[in-house]
Length: 304
Image 1 (cartoon, rainbow, N blue to C red):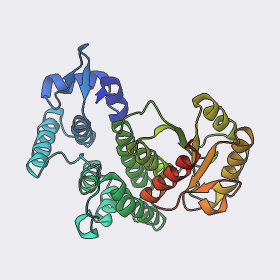
Image 2: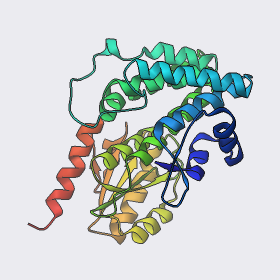
Image 3: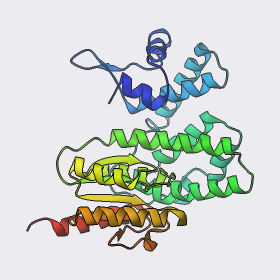
Image 4: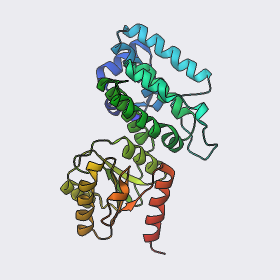
């Protein structure tokens, strides 16, 4: 559940607008805490996101509210909220039951925020979070990058899509809940690195696996990594190394962290993880394998 302040941050909607949409149009009906504060669910955030996208495309607030309610009711009739993801094992999703990546690219190409949101909703309704990320989202990101490079989508379309995915992952990260005990893992990117969707998705996966995490984001200077580890008493660090240009900065961060904190475990993920060295531990190239690598390394260090 999310406070009204957090809901505003995640959706990009002002506090006054959130209250007005609730009061005038009944788009959401947040529950109240014992202290009478509004608390919004993940489905509330989805409804607000749909309405905001429609308003931004020129719909009146009243028309957007009616359309939002119709879409939410349609989702419920098809079997429940599309934002729901399962947390346990199950059949591996076949490509035929996941949305087509070219539909996502086409929606981004025409800057259709509602269609992008609907396609993401559909994908994450099909299976557990980790499976959808491994089998659909990461391959989709590669196609999106190629589509931008060959002109099928504009920079604006690529930014729209990246922002939509980042917001979805950020909401999933918050929904996974913050664990207050156990080893702390800090995650982010080395200085100069900005492609953060993969490491943010992994931060979600670690939270879902029960780890206490601190997500530090993109382009974090080496010195700030050291301060963050010391401040949180981190047991491990995860660095994403998606590009060749990120290898040397990641290696520098790794060397400095291990020199100051010899017992720290520094994991590296991303396409260039095997080039970092300097005492780092590669995570592999899918979410489930990476979570298992963290489990194995940290369990080996726990007292018998």
